[in-house]
Length: 185
Image 1: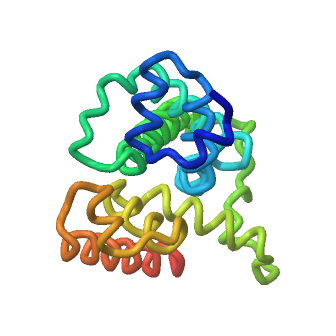
Image 2: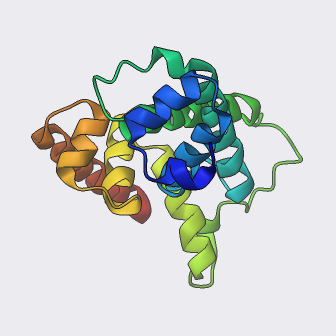
């Protein structure tokens, strides 16, 4: 079977083909969903390399566990959850590795870009925003990322998160409020 033929198959059919031993079907799944999944992975990494590592880990899990996909949700939703879980694991382990000692002389005292004398550049603003987003509750941050960064509709984001649209809206609003507060600190 060629990749061209896989292009016309539904996600459900691709899953069936992959489980039947057709590796090219998984390549089509990645081609179909990869760009959106990478946007989600970027939320959890500090740079493009981290995002690709997160996505690679999630896709490895997907390839190993596709037989557990129960089709109660869409394949995109299932893959999103794998990326979110991989991203959460990555971010959690990163935080554990990067806890600086308070008396560590190697930690520069002026490392906080929010305290810079000059106005923030676009890069500095991005770094401050990412640091602030790391302090937002994961469910709220996920709602914000799904809608504002990944471009999903409220209904689709709610489906992916397994909650009602009203819940996803309130989580997004809380995330925005928290970010506003953190950005002025």
